[in-house]
Amino acid sequence: MIQNFIYDNPATLNNFQADIDETVDFLELFSELFGLYPFADEKYGHCMAPISGGMEHQTMTTQGFFEKSLTAHELGHQWFGDNVTCASWADIWVNEGFASYSEQLMLENLYPAEAAQNMLDVHDNVKSQPNGSVYVLDSLNEGRIFSGRLTYDKGSAIVHTIRFVLNNDTQFFQALKNFQQDFADSVAKGIDVQYALEAESGLDLTNLFSEWYFGQGYPTYSTKWNTVSGNLHLQVNHTTSTGITPLFTNPIEIKFARTGMPDTTIRFDIQSNSENFVIPSVGTVSGVVAIDPNNWVVNASGNNVKDPNFLAAIEESNLLNGMSIFPNPSHDKVTIDFASSGDYELILSDIQGKEILRASCKKEITLDVSALSKGTYLILLSDKTKGLLRKEKLIVE
Ligand SMILES: [Zn+2]
Image (cartoon, rainbow, N blue to C red; front, side):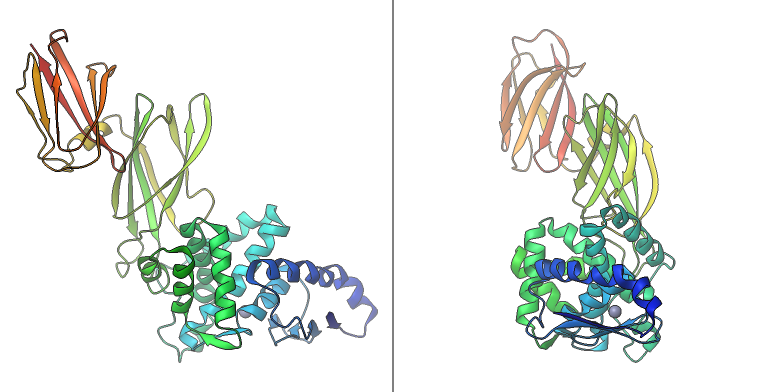
């Protein structure tokens, strides 16, 4: 049952009826996503009062007006704030981060055309200053506790990022449901959200929370790329807006334009400030369309540069410094030793890149090149996760 107490003025109902009526859809949506409305045995409702926003009184929110994002935010608080309350002011994210993200979930499900712009606006506000954590360090500072930029907007943005990192909405929303049950009628810390997500997903989210919840600032990504024989060679670099958090290890999506093919969006796992990737069979990439095209991560974009020599940069990497080819030049048997064991794939090609043979190998491999005509060949060694590791010349004489 939904009860509404509004002003006794004929214009009020006319003005707000359509907005008020949407509460039913929001209640059903959030019950689906977070678990049944916690006070279903009682009621939900609104009581109008001359305030500038809303206040999420349990089962009876006070609002000064009706607008879908405000109504969704206060309704979200019935789960995050009223059913489960932040354990201390330092953990206010449990209330306001999730109530703010409820606005995004409402748009995504009921007004999908407005969702992307909402998250972009949230990101822009977060980035209006280079620092600040969602976790409240100074819990005696009321201005900081209720900071629109850090507690509400960054709080909402990082819930979105966590969802992206899980990359599994079933697990993500199940974790929120578990959290609501485990802490019903009780209090929880921000870190309890981490534990609930880890228990459901099996992931270790320590770095994610230390970078995005306790940490400060945001990354600026730039790329260097090249395509060779349909393979994309890519370097993803990032700097950060504050030295307090020098590295962000969340994955990032990058959208590429291709010649004669539709754009493609690829997700990259990031562990360091500079990462190299080789993505096979992408086609001819003509440019980077966008970093993070779906706005999962608060970030800024630096330069995206095509570097026609970029393959060489990978060849020179130290990933497999110990690789040796002997004898070289060779006329019958040649042994390639990789120094360290791995799941490698070796391709022997001619100098134009035309494949002659392909073999899986662990530590070393011996090839018979006696049937090959004299000349220069290429040995390309790749690894399933790191892509191309080495490209070396082999002379047959
Ligand atoms: Zn709120």
